[in-house]
Length: 106
Image (cartoon, rainbow, N blue to C red; front, side):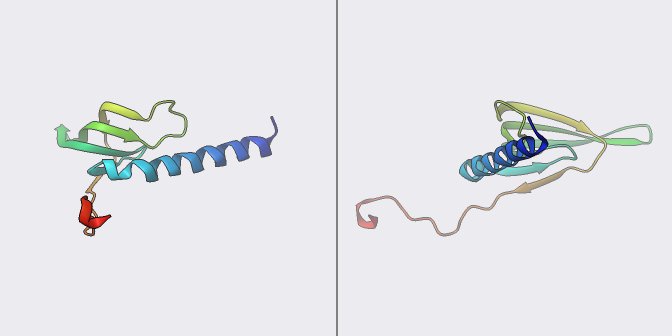
């Protein structure tokens, strides 16, 4: 396999991952970013812990989707991350304009 073939393969995998993200993002409530991964999840619990002068984050997520090209299965029931690096948690906003279901709206 040439370097060009490998680069093309990785680009195709990244595009497929983006498309999957676009399809599933509406199923989740939170976005969680760590130094190593990007997650979508429906429940997140972050605790700031300390041992001596060191402070770290203990993050637990439920019903998560992991942004990772190399994972064969990206849906995970429970994820736990322990890190000394920053963690960003954002609640996703739901679209204000939702078309109701029903016979009058078809």
